[in-house]
Image 1 (cartoon, helix red, strand yellow):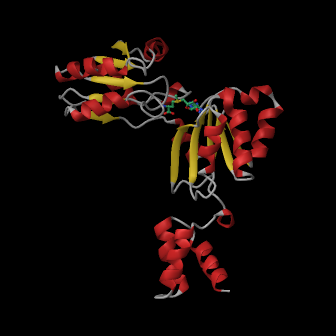
Image 2 (cartoon, rainbow, N blue to C red):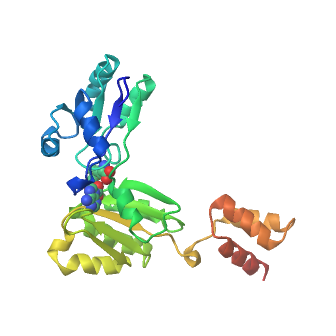
Image 3 (cartoon, rainbow, N blue to C red):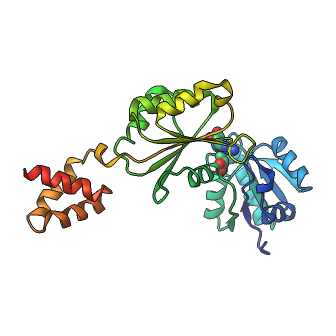
Length: 278
Ligand code: SAM
Protein backbone atom coordinates (compact mmCIF):
# COMPACT_ATOMS: atom_id res chain seq x y z
CA UNK A 1 0.00 0.00 0.00
CA UNK A 2 1.19 3.50 -0.79
CA UNK A 3 0.97 6.50 1.54
CA UNK A 4 -1.22 8.37 -0.94
CA UNK A 5 -4.92 7.58 -0.64
CA UNK A 6 -5.72 5.17 -3.48
CA UNK A 7 -8.69 3.37 -4.97
CA UNK A 8 -7.75 -0.33 -5.09
CA UNK A 9 -9.59 -2.67 -7.47
CA UNK A 10 -9.56 -6.01 -5.68
CA UNK A 11 -10.61 -9.26 -7.42
CA UNK A 12 -12.22 -11.88 -5.15
CA UNK A 13 -12.66 -15.66 -5.68
CA UNK A 14 -15.17 -16.95 -8.26
CA UNK A 15 -15.82 -20.17 -6.35
CA UNK A 16 -12.83 -21.27 -4.33
CA UNK A 17 -11.90 -19.09 -1.36
CA UNK A 18 -8.28 -20.25 -1.60
CA UNK A 19 -7.99 -18.17 -4.77
CA UNK A 20 -7.85 -14.89 -2.84
CA UNK A 21 -4.32 -13.46 -2.85
CA UNK A 22 -2.29 -12.55 0.22
CA UNK A 23 -2.08 -9.02 -1.15
CA UNK A 24 -5.86 -8.81 -1.58
CA UNK A 25 -6.34 -9.75 2.09
CA UNK A 26 -3.77 -7.17 3.17
CA UNK A 27 -5.26 -4.36 1.09
CA UNK A 28 -8.81 -5.19 2.21
CA UNK A 29 -7.64 -5.17 5.83
CA UNK A 30 -5.72 -1.89 5.59
CA UNK A 31 -7.99 0.43 3.58
CA UNK A 32 -10.45 2.75 5.35
CA UNK A 33 -13.45 1.55 3.33
CA UNK A 34 -14.50 -1.40 1.21
CA UNK A 35 -17.05 -0.53 -1.48
CA UNK A 36 -18.87 -3.78 -2.23
CA UNK A 37 -21.48 -4.63 -4.87
CA UNK A 38 -23.54 -6.38 -2.17
CA UNK A 39 -22.34 -5.81 1.39
CA UNK A 40 -24.28 -8.78 2.79
CA UNK A 41 -22.84 -11.14 0.18
CA UNK A 42 -19.29 -9.89 0.80
CA UNK A 43 -19.69 -10.05 4.60
CA UNK A 44 -19.20 -13.83 4.41
CA UNK A 45 -15.91 -13.47 2.53
CA UNK A 46 -14.63 -10.73 4.82
CA UNK A 47 -15.59 -12.67 7.91
CA UNK A 48 -13.85 -15.79 6.59
CA UNK A 49 -10.58 -13.85 6.32
CA UNK A 50 -11.16 -11.91 9.58
CA UNK A 51 -11.25 -8.57 7.76
CA UNK A 52 -13.01 -5.98 9.91
CA UNK A 53 -12.91 -3.00 7.51
CA UNK A 54 -16.11 -0.92 7.22
CA UNK A 55 -18.15 -1.61 4.07
CA UNK A 56 -20.58 0.38 1.99
CA UNK A 57 -22.54 -0.64 -1.07
CA UNK A 58 -21.72 0.36 -4.64
CA UNK A 59 -23.99 -1.15 -7.27
CA UNK A 60 -25.52 -0.15 -10.59
CA UNK A 61 -28.38 1.74 -8.91
CA UNK A 62 -26.30 3.96 -6.61
CA UNK A 63 -22.93 4.17 -8.41
CA UNK A 64 -23.25 7.87 -9.35
CA UNK A 65 -24.12 8.95 -5.81
CA UNK A 66 -21.50 6.70 -4.20
CA UNK A 67 -18.84 7.85 -6.66
CA UNK A 68 -19.15 11.47 -5.54
CA UNK A 69 -18.98 10.42 -1.88
CA UNK A 70 -16.02 8.06 -2.33
CA UNK A 71 -14.03 10.60 -4.36
CA UNK A 72 -14.42 13.07 -1.49
CA UNK A 73 -13.19 10.46 1.00
CA UNK A 74 -10.23 9.55 -1.23
CA UNK A 75 -9.33 13.23 -1.58
CA UNK A 76 -9.59 13.51 2.20
CA UNK A 77 -6.87 10.86 2.57
CA UNK A 78 -8.90 7.64 3.03
CA UNK A 79 -8.04 4.66 0.79
CA UNK A 80 -10.88 2.58 -0.63
CA UNK A 81 -10.99 -0.99 -1.97
CA UNK A 82 -13.63 -1.88 -4.56
CA UNK A 83 -14.90 -5.47 -4.68
CA UNK A 84 -17.77 -7.15 -6.51
CA UNK A 85 -19.70 -10.30 -5.61
CA UNK A 86 -17.08 -12.45 -7.33
CA UNK A 87 -14.14 -12.04 -9.68
CA UNK A 88 -12.73 -8.80 -11.03
CA UNK A 89 -14.76 -5.62 -10.43
CA UNK A 90 -15.79 -3.74 -13.62
CA UNK A 91 -15.72 -6.93 -15.73
CA UNK A 92 -19.51 -7.23 -16.26
CA UNK A 93 -19.70 -5.72 -12.76
CA UNK A 94 -20.04 -2.19 -11.29
CA UNK A 95 -17.12 0.20 -10.83
CA UNK A 96 -16.56 1.89 -14.20
CA UNK A 97 -18.15 5.21 -13.15
CA UNK A 98 -16.03 5.33 -9.99
CA UNK A 99 -12.76 4.47 -11.73
CA UNK A 100 -13.34 6.98 -14.52
CA UNK A 101 -14.16 9.73 -12.05
CA UNK A 102 -11.05 8.95 -9.97
CA UNK A 103 -8.92 9.10 -13.12
CA UNK A 104 -10.49 12.43 -14.13
CA UNK A 105 -9.81 13.86 -10.68
CA UNK A 106 -6.23 12.62 -10.48
CA UNK A 107 -6.99 10.14 -7.67
CA UNK A 108 -4.61 7.15 -7.88
CA UNK A 109 -6.23 3.87 -8.97
CA UNK A 110 -4.39 0.57 -8.56
CA UNK A 111 -5.72 -2.81 -9.68
CA UNK A 112 -4.66 -6.07 -8.08
CA UNK A 113 -4.41 -9.08 -10.43
CA UNK A 114 -6.76 -11.92 -9.58
CA UNK A 115 -9.70 -14.19 -10.46
CA UNK A 116 -11.78 -13.50 -13.55
CA UNK A 117 -14.13 -16.14 -14.99
CA UNK A 118 -13.51 -15.12 -18.62
CA UNK A 119 -9.72 -15.43 -18.44
CA UNK A 120 -9.84 -18.54 -16.27
CA UNK A 121 -12.19 -20.29 -18.73
CA UNK A 122 -10.32 -19.19 -21.83
CA UNK A 123 -6.92 -20.29 -20.58
CA UNK A 124 -8.06 -23.92 -20.21
CA UNK A 125 -10.52 -24.03 -23.14
CA UNK A 126 -8.19 -25.30 -25.83
CA UNK A 127 -9.44 -22.50 -28.13
CA UNK A 128 -6.98 -20.02 -29.66
CA UNK A 129 -5.89 -17.43 -27.11
CA UNK A 130 -3.50 -15.36 -29.26
CA UNK A 131 -6.38 -13.06 -30.10
CA UNK A 132 -9.83 -13.03 -28.48
CA UNK A 133 -12.70 -10.71 -27.67
CA UNK A 134 -14.75 -10.65 -24.46
CA UNK A 135 -18.30 -9.44 -25.09
CA UNK A 136 -19.89 -9.75 -21.64
CA UNK A 137 -23.47 -11.08 -21.72
CA UNK A 138 -25.34 -11.65 -24.98
CA UNK A 139 -28.55 -9.63 -25.40
CA UNK A 140 -31.61 -11.28 -23.85
CA UNK A 141 -33.98 -10.73 -26.81
CA UNK A 142 -33.68 -13.44 -29.46
CA UNK A 143 -33.51 -11.05 -32.39
CA UNK A 144 -30.73 -8.95 -30.88
CA UNK A 145 -28.85 -12.09 -29.83
CA UNK A 146 -28.98 -13.52 -33.32
CA UNK A 147 -27.79 -10.28 -34.79
CA UNK A 148 -24.80 -10.16 -32.39
CA UNK A 149 -23.99 -13.79 -33.19
CA UNK A 150 -24.16 -13.11 -36.94
CA UNK A 151 -21.11 -10.88 -36.55
CA UNK A 152 -19.14 -14.03 -35.65
CA UNK A 153 -19.73 -15.77 -39.00
CA UNK A 154 -16.43 -14.50 -40.46
CA UNK A 155 -14.63 -13.79 -37.18
CA UNK A 156 -11.15 -15.27 -37.12
CA UNK A 157 -10.59 -15.23 -33.38
CA UNK A 158 -12.16 -16.58 -30.20
CA UNK A 159 -15.22 -14.86 -28.65
CA UNK A 160 -16.00 -15.12 -24.93
CA UNK A 161 -19.44 -14.56 -23.32
CA UNK A 162 -20.88 -14.83 -19.85
CA UNK A 163 -24.23 -16.57 -19.61
CA UNK A 164 -26.87 -17.12 -16.94
CA UNK A 165 -28.14 -20.67 -16.26
CA UNK A 166 -31.72 -19.79 -17.26
CA UNK A 167 -30.57 -18.80 -20.75
CA UNK A 168 -27.73 -21.24 -21.42
CA UNK A 169 -29.79 -23.69 -23.49
CA UNK A 170 -31.41 -20.95 -25.59
CA UNK A 171 -28.05 -19.32 -26.19
CA UNK A 172 -26.32 -22.48 -27.35
CA UNK A 173 -29.36 -23.28 -29.52
CA UNK A 174 -29.04 -19.84 -31.15
CA UNK A 175 -25.30 -20.40 -31.66
CA UNK A 176 -26.15 -23.67 -33.41
CA UNK A 177 -28.70 -21.93 -35.64
CA UNK A 178 -26.46 -18.99 -36.58
CA UNK A 179 -22.99 -20.57 -36.63
CA UNK A 180 -23.70 -24.23 -37.41
CA UNK A 181 -21.00 -26.69 -36.42
CA UNK A 182 -18.45 -24.12 -35.18
CA UNK A 183 -16.35 -25.40 -32.26
CA UNK A 184 -17.52 -24.04 -28.92
CA UNK A 185 -16.45 -24.62 -25.33
CA UNK A 186 -18.74 -24.11 -22.34
CA UNK A 187 -17.01 -23.81 -18.96
CA UNK A 188 -19.25 -24.38 -15.96
CA UNK A 189 -18.73 -23.86 -12.23
CA UNK A 190 -15.07 -22.84 -12.54
CA UNK A 191 -12.96 -23.48 -9.44
CA UNK A 192 -15.94 -25.20 -7.75
CA UNK A 193 -16.54 -28.88 -6.98
CA UNK A 194 -18.38 -29.60 -10.23
CA UNK A 195 -16.13 -27.64 -12.58
CA UNK A 196 -16.78 -28.91 -16.11
CA UNK A 197 -15.60 -28.02 -19.63
CA UNK A 198 -17.78 -29.21 -22.52
CA UNK A 199 -16.15 -28.89 -25.90
CA UNK A 200 -17.46 -29.71 -29.38
CA UNK A 201 -20.12 -28.43 -31.76
CA UNK A 202 -23.08 -26.46 -30.40
CA UNK A 203 -25.15 -29.62 -30.95
CA UNK A 204 -22.75 -31.58 -28.70
CA UNK A 205 -23.20 -28.95 -25.98
CA UNK A 206 -27.01 -28.98 -26.42
CA UNK A 207 -26.93 -32.76 -25.96
CA UNK A 208 -24.89 -32.34 -22.77
CA UNK A 209 -27.26 -29.66 -21.39
CA UNK A 210 -30.31 -31.80 -22.10
CA UNK A 211 -28.82 -35.01 -20.71
CA UNK A 212 -29.40 -34.05 -17.06
CA UNK A 213 -31.27 -31.09 -15.50
CA UNK A 214 -28.23 -30.48 -13.24
CA UNK A 215 -26.19 -29.72 -16.37
CA UNK A 216 -28.10 -26.45 -16.87
CA UNK A 217 -27.47 -25.23 -13.32
CA UNK A 218 -24.54 -23.11 -12.16
CA UNK A 219 -22.48 -20.39 -13.77
CA UNK A 220 -21.30 -20.52 -17.37
CA UNK A 221 -18.71 -19.04 -19.68
CA UNK A 222 -19.43 -19.67 -23.37
CA UNK A 223 -16.52 -19.51 -25.79
CA UNK A 224 -16.89 -19.65 -29.56
CA UNK A 225 -13.91 -20.63 -31.68
CA UNK A 226 -12.79 -18.85 -34.85
CA UNK A 227 -14.41 -19.48 -38.24
CA UNK A 228 -12.63 -22.14 -40.26
CA UNK A 229 -10.62 -20.67 -43.12
CA UNK A 230 -12.91 -22.29 -45.67
CA UNK A 231 -15.97 -20.73 -43.95
CA UNK A 232 -14.60 -17.23 -44.23
CA UNK A 233 -16.23 -15.00 -46.74
CA UNK A 234 -13.61 -12.63 -48.13
CA UNK A 235 -14.99 -9.09 -48.09
CA UNK A 236 -15.28 -7.50 -51.54
CA UNK A 237 -12.96 -4.60 -50.49
CA UNK A 238 -10.27 -7.16 -49.67
CA UNK A 239 -10.68 -8.79 -53.09
CA UNK A 240 -10.49 -5.37 -54.82
CA UNK A 241 -7.28 -4.54 -52.94
CA UNK A 242 -5.86 -7.95 -53.78
CA UNK A 243 -6.48 -7.55 -57.50
CA UNK A 244 -5.07 -3.98 -57.47
CA UNK A 245 -1.91 -5.12 -55.66
CA UNK A 246 -1.48 -8.08 -58.00
CA UNK A 247 -0.73 -5.61 -60.79
CA UNK A 248 2.40 -4.54 -58.92
CA UNK A 249 3.55 -7.64 -57.03
CA UNK A 250 3.26 -11.44 -57.01
CA UNK A 251 -0.02 -12.92 -55.73
CA UNK A 252 1.72 -14.48 -52.72
CA UNK A 253 3.00 -11.13 -51.51
CA UNK A 254 -0.29 -9.35 -52.29
CA UNK A 255 -2.20 -12.03 -50.32
CA UNK A 256 0.08 -11.46 -47.32
CA UNK A 257 -0.41 -7.69 -47.42
CA UNK A 258 -4.23 -7.93 -47.71
CA UNK A 259 -4.36 -10.64 -45.03
CA UNK A 260 -2.52 -8.35 -42.61
CA UNK A 261 -4.72 -5.39 -43.45
CA UNK A 262 -8.09 -7.16 -43.10
CA UNK A 263 -7.08 -9.74 -40.47
CA UNK A 264 -7.78 -12.64 -42.86
CA UNK A 265 -5.94 -15.89 -43.51
CA UNK A 266 -3.13 -15.54 -46.07
CA UNK A 267 -3.86 -18.95 -47.58
CA UNK A 268 -7.53 -18.18 -48.08
CA UNK A 269 -6.64 -14.97 -49.92
CA UNK A 270 -3.99 -16.71 -52.00
CA UNK A 271 -6.57 -19.35 -52.99
CA UNK A 272 -9.18 -16.67 -53.73
CA UNK A 273 -6.59 -14.88 -55.90
CA UNK A 274 -5.90 -18.08 -57.85
CA UNK A 275 -9.64 -18.71 -58.24
CA UNK A 276 -10.16 -15.18 -59.53
CA UNK A 277 -7.46 -15.62 -62.17
CA UNK A 278 -8.84 -18.91 -63.49
N1 SAM B 1 -16.61 -9.87 -12.54
C1 SAM B 1 -16.79 -11.29 -12.69
C2 SAM B 1 -15.50 -11.91 -13.26
O1 SAM B 1 -14.45 -11.29 -13.18
O2 SAM B 1 -15.55 -13.02 -13.77
C3 SAM B 1 -17.99 -11.60 -13.54
C4 SAM B 1 -19.28 -11.05 -13.01
S1 SAM B 1 -20.67 -11.42 -14.00
C5 SAM B 1 -21.91 -10.47 -13.19
C6 SAM B 1 -21.09 -13.04 -13.50
C7 SAM B 1 -20.92 -14.05 -14.62
O3 SAM B 1 -19.57 -14.49 -14.64
C8 SAM B 1 -21.73 -15.31 -14.43
O4 SAM B 1 -23.05 -15.15 -14.91
C9 SAM B 1 -20.96 -16.32 -15.24
O5 SAM B 1 -21.25 -16.16 -16.61
C10 SAM B 1 -19.51 -15.86 -14.99
N2 SAM B 1 -18.95 -16.60 -13.84
C11 SAM B 1 -18.68 -16.12 -12.61
N3 SAM B 1 -18.17 -17.09 -11.83
C12 SAM B 1 -18.12 -18.21 -12.58
C13 SAM B 1 -17.69 -19.55 -12.35
N4 SAM B 1 -17.23 -19.94 -11.17
N5 SAM B 1 -17.78 -20.44 -13.37
C14 SAM B 1 -18.24 -20.05 -14.58
N6 SAM B 1 -18.65 -18.80 -14.86
C15 SAM B 1 -18.60 -17.89 -13.88
